[in-house]
Amino acid sequence: MEYFYHPAAVAEYGKAVEYYKEISAAIARQFVQNVERAVSLIVDQPNACTKISRNVRRCIIANFPYSIFYSEFEKRIIIVAVAHQKRRPNYWKRRKP
Image 1 (cartoon, rainbow, N blue to C red):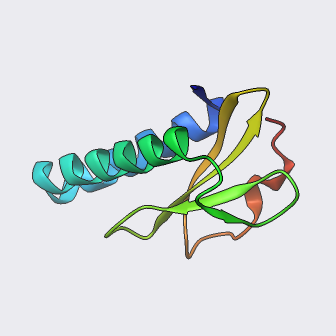
Image 2: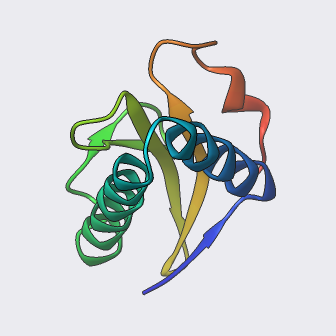
């Protein structure tokens, strides 16, 4: 199954990686690995994560306070947000997949 990032999700992901790089390169690498694992789970089992609305599911990133919000459309996964769990809840809901 194909997957794509919403442009704003790409920016969020990049900002999070940069933040963790400022702390430690090793922590930044671990964050990227955990996001990649989460994306692999989403692609392999799109219905495995928690459904939070009619078209959106949430996958929590292990060991980090981030979640991936995504939708499945016609055998494609659209990653709508890579969002911090404690900041501005639901800000991403206006994004069109």
